[in-house]
Image (tube, rainbow, N blue to C red):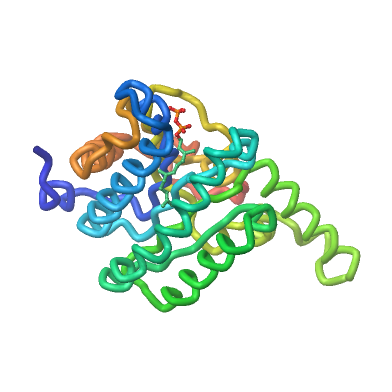
Length: 252
Ligand code: FPP
């Protein structure tokens, strides 16, 4: 058993991102409908939120529905939309009690109107909470996000709001959906898959990656603590050599 007190002896990641994968396989292996895997996945997320609060993680960003997921069968898509709407109304009390701010990123124009409205209402109701920010990526794809950012930037250039020579990493980052969040320190992916699947491609340039075989519905607080313990063993050099202290003016 890993204790929170033990973990707190070492640096806690400020921002943890999670690809919550394996709900479908979890359900199939038990002879259940896929949506039952997603429902169990929602419970796992609730538990991980508690663990994030306990350890002092400030930002938790989860991949709940990718742009590619729109290609799933209609009944699964609509059951997921209903799950998101219900989660908003059922979890508001919990979010408020624990001072969690709820935020959504992604191409929300593609969502059904009732779903968009529930999400927006939950964002507004929790906007002043500061214990932890939960960002849910819905109808999200990183390439879409980067292209969208490029379009917005191009518009600002066209309207003389920005000078091309002033564009650097920091300026570009402001056009991404995740702004002003810091980049994730740790990315967790469950369910044996070892890929990024179009999630936060820009933001994870120096993020520590952690893959586990556990299906998301089975992922517990202890599994979250194990990921943090592994993170604490890593040496983050951001491309530099540890001993070399010289400050170079090179953008990373
Ligand atoms: C990936 O598993 C999971 C999803 C596409 C949905 C994630 C949604 C939840 C965890 C529900 C809770 C979320 C919120 C924000 C309330 P998969 O279906 O791709 O699994 P598979 O790879 O085994 O088929």
